[in-house]
Length: 453
Ligand code: NDP
Image 1: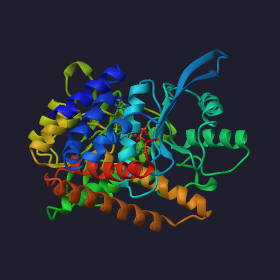
Image 2: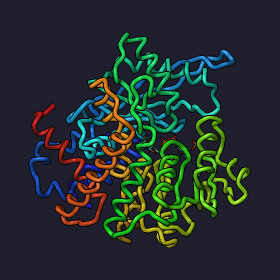
Image 3: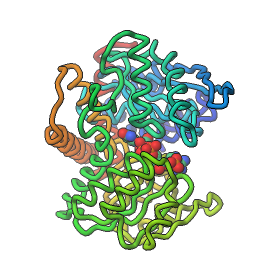
Image 4: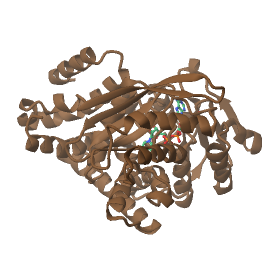
């Protein structure tokens, strides 16, 4: 670690105590940027990095609501408006009991670089609440969303800040949030993405993150003249990103053998085909059940409950070719990364945000596998959100084929940027440096253009 990075990290830790995920995200990016700062002293003298790690604005608010028993509940809401150099703040909302300021700051920070990589004009933001939609009735989720929006609406707008979904925020939640925004503002605008098709949504938006992550893996494989056909794949999670990752792997001829949720994972040696995927979609999106039920339904599958005492996740300890972590941050630690390598995995495409710890990432890099970090590999979701904004502005809707084609082109472009930049800065094939530096340059140069603000 260079002295500059060391000093900066010491400052970050002192100024942002108890935010380990934010420290981790900054450290990973700063390590890559050391290569750039040596060549470009103007970024240092203009304190571009010091400015990028400081959110432009943090909004934190009370979200009171009443449950079905008539009891008052109180949650905490957040919106981190991280950087608006290249466009309105853009990034999802996460509803999960683990949500806190540090987690949302890490996500907002990552979003700045990711959005820049998409080539679309979007700044970075993130928000959410420690509200847990699991086990809540539709009416409770609606009342919560309405209360959340009754504060958030003051801070967002189609040209200011455009939230979307993330963990715990899918089509149902976006609907309730949009309805409340429309009522409070008395206007119908593209203030959120991930909207329903009847009210301004884009085709392919639900699929985009998962599809994009698989397109990115296909691009990485292509550099070795290989494809996903017949590849055995480990996928974690069973939500939006995981489901469409599986769908796209299947359509490209691959085989998926795992899925998980926060309680445990299933291993299905026979493969999770289309029919089984449809079962998972119904289980997770409609019945809102647990992945354990998959093993009760299909005898070829074995369910293993998650045991945090183990120190590693057995999901990553199966023979396979590719891994698509698609659940949450830090789900692959150093031991998991070693297990993946030991089991023959040589492609990792991150659907989730920061699913691998820094030690795990270093193991992937040392072993020179095809490793696509989340900032690049999962950028398809926000890219299609950007396309949804374009369609809303034009008051037009593109066909499924058109959006999918644009998504594929964007993922190819991101892949190429990562490779070109990694080569230009002396670390060919290092997608981590490629994504961090590629995302940084556009934002940093714009910040120089705009002056010290
Ligand atoms: P969903 O809420 O649809 O699904 C999340 C999945 O991850 C669920 O299976 C959930 O299990 C599991 N999960 C959540 N938290 C944990 C945890 N602490 N430990 C283990 N499993 C967990 O969210 P998405 O699919 O939208 O998001 C998944 C990941 O992809 C996140 O990292 C998100 O930030 C990232 N992402 C999402 C984008 C999008 O467009 N939706 C865009 C880019 C990145 P359970 O149901 O038990 O909680």
